[in-house]
Image (cartoon, rainbow, N blue to C red; front, side, top):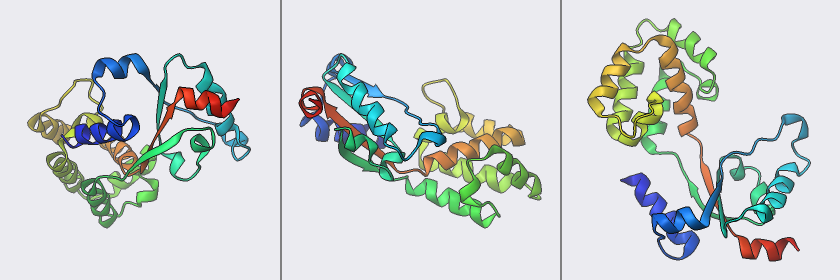
Length: 200
């Protein structure tokens, strides 16, 4: 429900009203991923890629959700408007804090190899399993993502059962995913007609 409210808020902020699913499918496209090789960063290539791609899109509206946009306003420089900044859920931050108390360094949680090393060093992984199940109870929408399930919805009981039976490798991957959930995401939006005027 919380995710739905957020999307409704984002749509209202971007369009001035809540659009129907049909309108979104017809008029909106998304820049899903944009990665610049480390060798070519800091020279404005991200801005150039977005700036030159926007006029080629055949829909009037373009959106982008980007983590790096918080630190590097490359999309804003290309003509996109920052609409909303999405902070991590407090339950996610609480889970990471519990991991820190178990000896995990939050900075390295995105490394599966690091997580495997830390899990093997624990006398028991039951505390890690418990905090994942507690997170699932607090924020049910993360079950599917944490388990990397392809199903639309994962019931709490099934998630808990899977976590209880999970091998260390799976738990290490789940902790990687948890680290991504701690990121602040920026929602950016562009009305193409305005973008075309901006670029010419």
